[in-house]
Length: 192
Image (cartoon, rainbow, N blue to C red; front, side, top):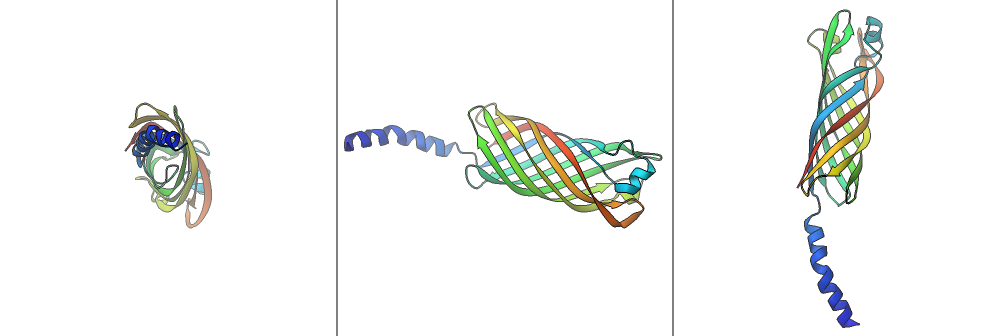
């Protein structure tokens, strides 16, 4: 019995050590992002937005440090741009998000599924209308799928986040209202 246990330990010890050495400690993501959200509240809609929701194109980047093999902390940053959120007069805007929070990941042979809850802020600006400039609290709940390419490289075909924030009412910036939207991101992941 002792000989069997010793032989089993000698056979399994190198694979356990190899698994511990290959555990992901840090992930860096970068890629394209599309955000669909109401950028300026009721007064803006009364002015005449294209749609109740405005499409912003841009980028998304994040860094996730894993404290345990399935649990990590994420810092997520995004920049989104729209050339026309109001059509009379034509007004464009840009939005920058900076969000932080816990991430949980389930790893498999082909890829990984993850989910996160992120909290932080959103800053929006417009060169044409100062009423569209603000910085407010924001949150995002979502997750996505990473498909393994190699040991240090993965492809993220989909990350979907449900975003919420409060925006000032257009014309009366002292009042605000809650808005929500969706953000899609896709790109590459590098693991260390």
